[in-house]
Length: 256
Image (tube, helix red, strand yellow):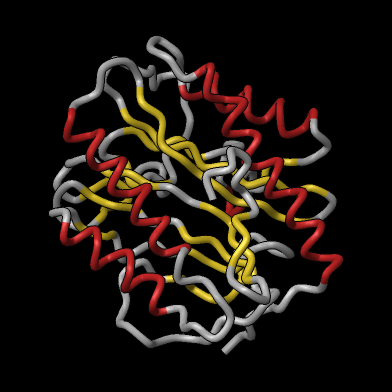
């Protein structure tokens, strides 16, 4: 089994800067998310912003992925490919996921956006997903086991009547795009590796309105949809384990 990297102070500082830029990118794009805009327009704006700030988008060319971010609308769980043909409409909910490479270090984050008037159900799903992530983050501290992150998320989400996607997970990040460990969002209590100060990873729960299963588009080989075409929501942060708890490296709004 590959080892979980405990980052050096120098690496942590580099990852912190890249993560801050990733978070700032999501703040920057918010004003452009509106009815009538294509997801490719948003992708181009994100690409431009990341490059203007001295970084490059990690997704572009990653395993053949063709764009600089992922934009996943409504029933798309993750890895939605931006397109000129996908136009935002009133009532849409969407996740925008960006990963920056700044001076060789990675920062990874995503959040939900809404277009115009969205349904009360969609708002509730988004709120539950945001809170589920927060509960997972609260489990981050030295000596705790990774399974407690997923246990906290899934226990809460299921109590609210939604389901947790089990086919996609969080992951170590920082010196590479995807590192050990795999961070499951539904897991048994007191299982998994033990967290140590200096570990950095994402927590990124995908929460479905209906069933937890997903299906990948046969044509583009990337877009993952809910198996029942019901709504899905996701939030993601890059987290550092500190000596006393955690630091949310991609939080630029002071939420954590």
